Image (cartoon, rainbow, N blue to C red; front, top):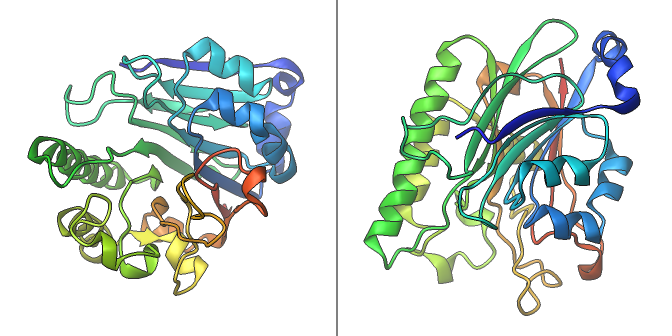
Length: 289
């Protein structure tokens, strides 16, 4: 079920046309907020004010529609798919520009009310349409065949939907917490995680298919260097953050034509452990559109 599509108004309501005319480049960020209420309390809105992305995709929102809009404040168009299980999952796209063609459908009805997939289209100043997806993929469990198959099915259905969107002719940007480290350079302790969920060959094969067979571009890797890292998630346990023992599991993956318009990518890693407002760091990409 598509939970909610709305507009948090205020002074931005009269500036939409001006914004549309002025937009030359656009910054798009993705972040797993690990609960929007806690993230806002810990400083998420300060980061948004400092960096000022035009579009942000959110995962693990874990809040009802009215609370999400209230926490974000004015000036956002919001598309949100709330999970039917209270306090679980939830994905959203928030934008300073209007959102259209909003949908939370993936794989027929298989993931209805799961709060794990939402897509919307943003029109840029030059009339270029960009379809943006916010996805939150299951963690999975290599020791539980049922849970693992659920994760693999989601990845499989996601690629089918991405292929459909690309065929429709728009630029497409697939973002979110995919809970898969693609290569050894994407996880600090890769040897200790071979065959485990998050670094399982069956999961990684779907990223191989999307990138190497279908030609989509992993912007975090293309623009972020050869690695290791930069990582986007660190466990709260132990000294993972201080030792940079992380995982690169948050992605922005673009159609080839859109990838050519991407100029830079940044992982907004907090300078200190105490400065974190999520266990994930935002990944932002600048596009010349």
